[in-house]
Length: 120
Image 1 (spheres, one colour):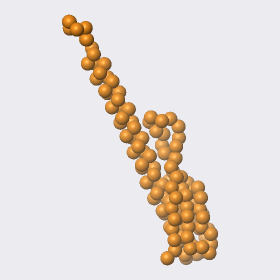
Image 2 (image 1 turned 90 degrees about the horizontal axis):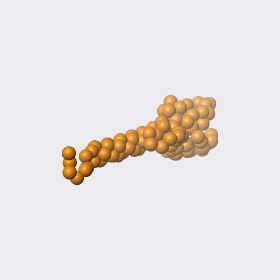
Image 3 (image 1 turned 90 degrees about the vertical axis):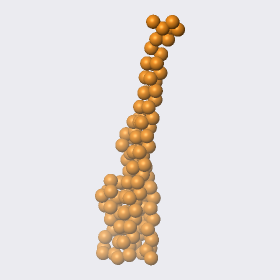
Image 4 (image 1 turned 180 degrees about the vertical axis):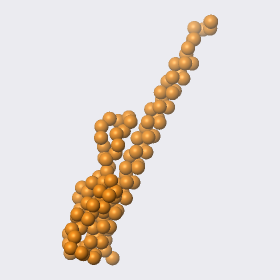
């Protein structure tokens, strides 16, 4: 027996430290998911803008916005906006990518990214 009456105090401290480490790891995983979704959105926005401006530069009768939508979808994103009218020399798109559920914060989330491509 311990004369100070502190039997088991190390176990409580160890459990608290382990719980803190689990929460920290979950937070790091959430940040990683958000950063991965942002990079996926950037890739999708860039490809959608380039596809739209390529259609503006070398028209083959297709709709630049429809082409941007197709390229965004191929990259796992949804086209939110496309300013790419025929006769212009630039395309600006906004795409949205959902972030898979966070471990610490409940609920769905998403990230939106804008990209612009110019002819010339």
